[in-house]
Image: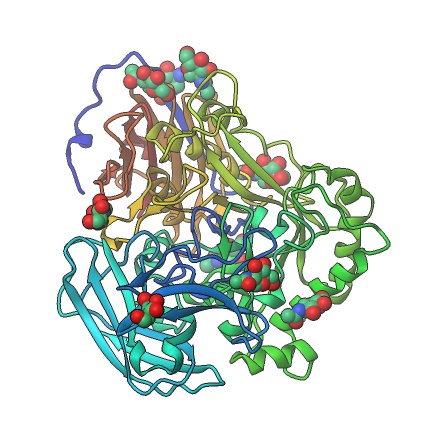
Length: 636
Ligand SMILES: *[C@@H]1O[C@H](CO)[C@@H](O)[C@H](O)[C@H]1NC(C)=O
Ligand SMILES: *[C@@H]1O[C@H](CO)[C@@H](O)[C@H](O)[C@H]1NC(C)=O
Ligand SMILES: *[C@@H]1O[C@H](CO)[C@@H](O)[C@H](O)[C@H]1NC(C)=O
Ligand SMILES: *[C@@H]1O[C@H](CO)[C@@H](O)[C@H](O)[C@H]1NC(C)=O
Ligand SMILES: *[C@@H]1O[C@H](CO)[C@@H](O)[C@H](O)[C@H]1NC(C)=O
Ligand SMILES: *[C@@H]1O[C@H](CO)[C@@H](O)[C@H](O)[C@H]1NC(C)=O
Ligand SMILES: *[C@@H]1O[C@H](CO)[C@@H](O)[C@H](O)[C@H]1NC(C)=O
Ligand SMILES: *[C@@H]1O[C@H](CO)[C@@H](O)[C@H](O)[C@H]1NC(C)=O
Ligand SMILES: *[C@@H]1O[C@H](CO)[C@@H](O)[C@H](O)[C@H]1NC(C)=O
């Protein structure tokens, strides 16, 4: 929106004007990737979220924590469903299948990840079946509410008695269903099946995906991320990487290859995952959005406080090296050849590896300091000297050029109070701000970890406080590797942690970009290649800012946020060398109140106003920023 009223003379105000003079040199080169994305299998971020699979519990996978079950499935008509561990299963990774027994029309129905989005587009499906059957299968999408059928496909049986045979089909609805309250069904005529039963496994259905990748990602969520213009992806967690036990850790080599070779596992968030969104899918996500991968490798600590001993850590170090070879090795290497076999002969480039996650917690601190981090750091830097290794904590003496990861979940006031956190930090060991979010109301204390009733969504005051903290990081853009909000996604129908950056349900039209999304988006879209020092006649607060230059566009940049002001803050801003008459764009984000939130299915509450302003006498840009606002000024 372009509005002119900000050009009017400033309203009388009792707030003191802030004079800021930006020098033309003396700053630092921005090495920070700045804003990225954190992936963590939580809130059905991947399964039932980004991963576009529509069928929940598609392969009846059990895990160390959760037994196989029939969640999300029900029988069609009078048929009966039972889980079976057959002597010849689909694969050793998928030992359990479902037997459908019946008379006449029989089959099974899936309710999806709390609904299935049905619209006129091509859905690609497949299933494996075992058992002799001379007839057809019917795949269909229909309404739960009134049974209306939106699409059907007749699939001629190729099935045989003693082997698993895959069948493919497509479904193309002619219209958009009125809601996502729909199911997927697969039926057959049991009277034509030998013994009146058939065994099924790996029943899958995908809508069109981002870049039309098979086994790909949900388009609307990729778009919401793309719109934010992120620069890196930290994956695969987080607690998700650590696992609830040593055996429950995220194992990279169980997430690659054909889907039927992926056993799945228990996530640390109360549900199982299929392994369908694995290591290669993460890399394709990076490729598709131009993200720098920040790969986290398992460091020998699980959430149940199990720690791998010094004598045994070598096995896991080797596993991390194997993973790096899989991603970056030539096709002549053992694991590079495996990558080629799975369709990616071209190696990827990995520049950042993080060792573990939050290793200072859960009883991990002493072993991480004494041998775990060093074992990984030494082995990785020896073989890959160009890789920036990052410790998962700053609470350790960092060797060489190692970086550290800093996480901050806090109340908004504490985000603001940490504006200058990095000013006195040396640039010897760069910092990844790997998980950042204002999660709880200003309670005068800080986060109460026993109270998980955090806000469902980021709220505007919290987002402004995050902006203040981000400005502190931008002022130190030579010391920060990158910054990401966390967690990033939440399925409103099944989640463990709020608030998050982007929230959604089964209906892509309802996806909500949070108030924080708008802050990150504005800052990302106005990247400074270099910081420039500024002097002011006033100290920081209630106005906080960072100043610099984009040397590609030769634009001078001022980024700011106002928090806790009793009135609008008048600003007189000059850039050395920028004279009277120079024009600039001033974009100001505000919201109706500090409590404004962007809800799933609701409107965007963040208002963005861009105004053209002109430098006056002595090159002064004069403008005024309201309480609880975030702003960027860029010169032309
Ligand atoms: C800073 O300078 C502005 C004029 O540019 C003036 O209005 C304001 O009072 C000064 N503030 C202080 C604290 O001196
Ligand atoms: C299948 O085997 C798993 C262990 O591998 C066991 O937990 C489960 O109960 C078995 N299921 C059936 C239906 O026999
Ligand atoms: C199929 O019909 C037979 C004979 O009437 C009956 O015994 C059996 O229980 C039926 N099966 C199912 C799944 O309804
Ligand atoms: C979906 O349909 C079921 C059955 O009619 C109903 O109980 C439920 O409330 C519906 N849910 C939504 C979100 O419409
Ligand atoms: C994964 O690698 C580990 C060794 O690092 C090995 O023990 C295991 O068998 C491998 N799993 C698969 C499925 O290849
Ligand atoms: C904001 O103002 C409140 C009330 O005066 C005060 O308690 C709080 O510390 C202030 N927060 C910051 C970050 O200055
Ligand atoms: C540039 O970096 C140095 C060292 O980290 C620091 O002292 C200085 O304040 C930085 N300059 C700016 C403009 O941030
Ligand atoms: C911009 O600054 C960077 C870092 O100082 C430098 O590498 C690059 O050459 C500069 N580009 C231009 C167009 O000045
Ligand atoms: C300014 O924002 C703070 C929160 O930072 C809020 O408590 C206060 O009421 C606001 N003041 C005005 C004048 O709007």
